[in-house]
Length: 345
Image (cartoon, rainbow, N blue to C red):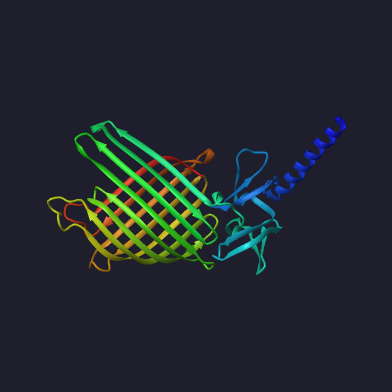
């Protein structure tokens, strides 16, 4: 009986070992010759994520630190020339040179030319991204207090990217009316294999400084990734936007404040992912009005983040809104400078 138990335990151990070795099919060799065996989760923003059975948390490795990669699994791969390969295997031919191969084509490229890749057979949760941050400041004079918070959610498939965000800033001080600013957006992008993308979305803004109760903008645009590398992206786009504005009513604006207009949208955005532990994202949108002669609006944003351990980060940013033709009693320019502490998935 004891001998049977030994055989049974040995058989279970061998079975688990075989399954374990079978699951860990991806191998990395780093520039310092360290070898990591595990399961590659993907390359995004110049960071390669690998899960291993001997660590409770995933390894995050800068792409420049990887010398060799061997994996039999299938990936969706984006290159710096804006082309995209689906269902491709990745194998290092020689240090620094990688081969991407699928049933349609084969490419041999420097590893630095790969912008991002992710496994084809991902579950729903692995395609999600999320971040949230909060900030608070207190000034003794007039008991000035400011609260700010934001949250972002995203979902990314082979070609589609869906994103949503919410940001709120509230300031209060003694004997002064509170200032409140709320922004929200929902957008969807479809990127073609040649770097051209199509975008559609809805943006919302409530801003007491410009007496704006609610601005709702529905927009469609098309653009192009001028540069798309593993460390930074730069794109430009053009389109049209339908602008609906509801203003706060007072003696100057009552009965005539609400506006509806058709606008063009011309914009550009830049994302830099690997400036040491820093990241930078900035967007510039110009809205020349089509139906209101001479009116121009500008929305600008820049956010800088500093990575901390365990996916935490520090954040600072500037958001600016300009309207060349504001309603009476409203400011033509509003800006807010924010700092915060956050976490991302």
